[in-house]
Length: 87
Image (cartoon, rainbow, N blue to C red; front, side):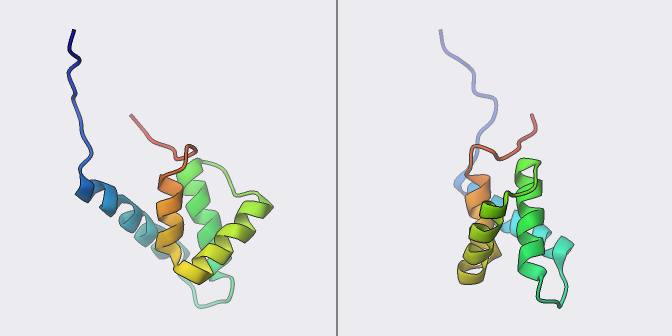
């Protein structure tokens, strides 16, 4: 018996999701102060997983954002098993 596939994800959609997610986090956390990275990390993890980051996750993710940018963290988050999706 064959199963019908009702939806698909294209390569373009896969690439666009972390970029749009990063843009949303950046928009929601924009400020000129020195705590911007920590706030971006907290917001990104909360949006992606539905929970705040642990202290260890906060430190590791902040280092990642400082080294590689917010988009890198967002790519990581959308590829985790904790990523929250809606049907």
